[in-house]
Length: 317
Image (tube, rainbow, N blue to C red):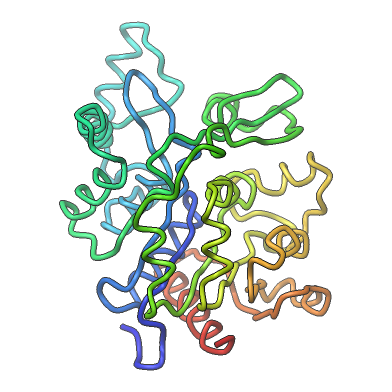
């Protein structure tokens, strides 16, 4: 558990698996109720008539101790009867939904159709799963990440899952962002006098964090908060631990370097956690830098990196 000199309340901006790993570390070392996770919903889409929220669900399953330890997404001990039957019937099976996972999608879709907000649905699910943290969508309004490629514009899940990130990326957009509003809980979390750190988790900056920042008002709230804002590098030795971050940066003509990520966040961040394997780059970075081992293979790794983030926040304050 946290010691007396560590932050009491922390807000984490998170995308998929990498972000959820650090969120879990923070969840375990902070006091009960001390964490708010703002989850990317740019990946959300409608599939088989169901509202799917991949990054939200990864956060839910991870903090509830239900995540698949091998895949990182979906539920542990999952069964696949639904998908096998759907395939036999000639249905669309490129996006796999496990039997247990399917229940969440059905219930979310039902409650949204009944008029509940996404925020309320997620809060209700988190309570049912006995999660003592707030998991908040970036917006209750639809925002959809669109990937422009050499083969045309694709919905994010089409690019990421159906095409396995193979098309060459030429740009990105966040449809609906200009008309979206931050989820109501975000303003309260970032204005909380007890807030002592904001952590941009090591998620893909362009696919996971950028959609959150594209919602009008969120960037301004982050800039206005008195708490230090810290970003954790998603790159180690010029490579992403998981996902297409390095591939996308290369295709967009961006140097595959933590320095480019730090520059992308710019004045939004007060500090940058750089992997110790990239220590030679530290002197060239503009924000204040802390070196740490950012590879999170084990639960102990996640807790250790979370403590490094909290200690860095204390230094910056």
